[in-house]
Length: 444
Image (tube, rainbow, N blue to C red; front, top):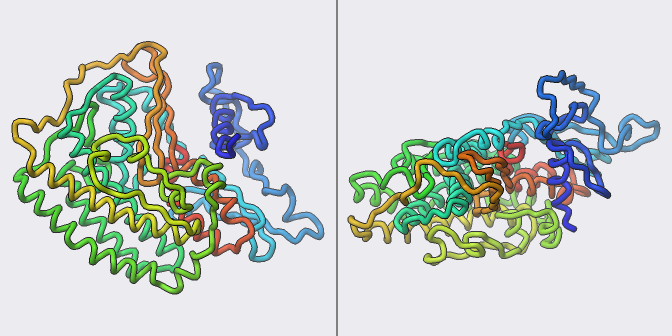
């Protein structure tokens, strides 16, 4: 029914062995074609030998590069990090400089995150993992995805004060992720390291200083807990709030500088305007979400459309752009930083006036959580890259029977061939960068 099912069904076939009738391209997606068995199936022989040869990777059109008289050439891009935003391999078929086919080859950094979560207890041992799915700074958003699923599964009510702190910290996390996307995109498209990339990293450093004050960590925060957050705001609170306000006061001027460096840069405009076009109906077909979807003019944001935290009590806007191209996706991320700042400022206003005797940072959560056998849940949050969802099925123990991550980068990356086919090689690079994928979230 929707093209986005292709990759998800290939993953189920690869890992579990489920076969789908009439699937257009049913083959492995994370493991090599020569892999023996399906690792998550009940009868998998985990001690069996595996022989993986280089010959398993076929061109998109098998033999097209070698056939007599063929005008196409197979070009391997990657797997190199950071050139491809992670350990990603693109099999590109070229006709001269034009891309006539591209297939993302993923699975190089599969780290068994879902299986590790299944081996940990709900209450204490799973929360450190979500930070590691997106190491671009979006860890708090990822933590919230797990927290939301587990809390609804266990019927835990979050104190209002903790919801405000979560909302504020999550938007700082969004700024961290978008600034990395902005800086890396400048490297991808105009080779700008000394100016834009370093400006973006400086911006991240300012935010990381604030988030480190709050969480104790600069990247892998582990700040959320089921029922709330691990501790209250740092003391003295007045100094912490003053630091945040100083940051927010200077942000508009600095964002204007980033626009001077990037969006008003004629070279970047030539590289991004009308390239990587992703029409709204195609964006929805592939299950894209986040800035990729909103850059195609689709007005969808889980913070508003499936409210959680404190978002529905605050004044902010969902950013969309109708250009459907690489430039639009860049604009969406830069404008979302402004909206994040608006949300943070409102949270600070609330926290400053919060009565001291009502600063409850955690609900009363049982020491051991054992949801009823065979209950299941899916909950999602609007992470930096889109809809980050968690599916959990319980079996009556204190550990999940099944823990599945719906990473937005996984679905977003599937749309790359639609964006790049028919364009030139440099446009392919610009389109890949505009997706802002993190491979830890793609391969999990």
